[in-house]
Amino acid sequence: MSKTFRCILVLIFSVVVLGKISAQNSIEPNIKISAHRGNTLAAPENTLATFRKVLALGVEFIEIDVRTSSDNALIILHDGNLDRTTSGLGPIKNLTLKEIKKLSAGKGYGEEFSKEQIPTLEETAKLIHQWNKKHAQKTFIYVDCKQVAAQPLIDLLKKYKLAEESVFYGNDAFLMELKQVYPQAKLLPALKNKEEIAAKVQNLQPYAFDVSWPALNKSLVDEIHSKGIRIFSDLLGPFDQTTNYTKAKELKIDLIQTDHVQLVKETLFN
Image 1: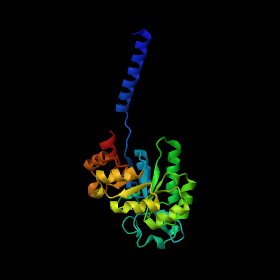
Image 2: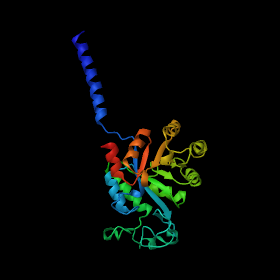
Image 3: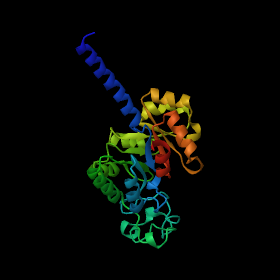
Image 4: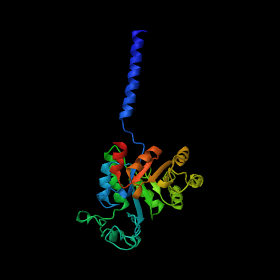
């Protein structure tokens, strides 16, 4: 064997070995994280305060709930009524944006957040857009379309370069409307059982299915993935625990939605 040939073999061996070591040492999370209502547990849900905190933690998506005021402003609030999380009472759809902005969205969080307001979708999109301009890891929006028309929703997200990469959850009728307005929208319909797959694929061509955690198993995951569709699942309430994060990774689902972003990251990626 010539000296030149031996050198080539050594070089090839080194490249292969070093490549394997590098691959083993690099952390490439397969599962993405969505922060449920931007939740960090350190600030009120669905507020700019918690969105700022969760952006600093590093997530792929922030889940928000979009509603419409009486004067057609798009605002962020989970409940249809103001009572649980704000200083107001009654349906938010009955108030103008000016009236909404007089309320505190920091109910139950003490003096520190007493002046926190209900954010608009525009304020939220602007915050995320500015973050994305300055950081390598981009964050997009997991839009829970509670009470909103498709066209103004898409128009606003396009303005902040968030329409293309964000995902849209809602009932099938709304997602059909959204698809007509913005054909490239990444639709995220709910999936209750495997019998619904064929019709939803035909009607919606979904980007992903929102599958309830108890319904997930390897067979269902494999079937959905075989169609080129992703799987998102809410690990909330009693399911939001480390054993289920590990199981989600083993099942190879694509996204965990959680109220405990830091715990998911520590469990799966550290």
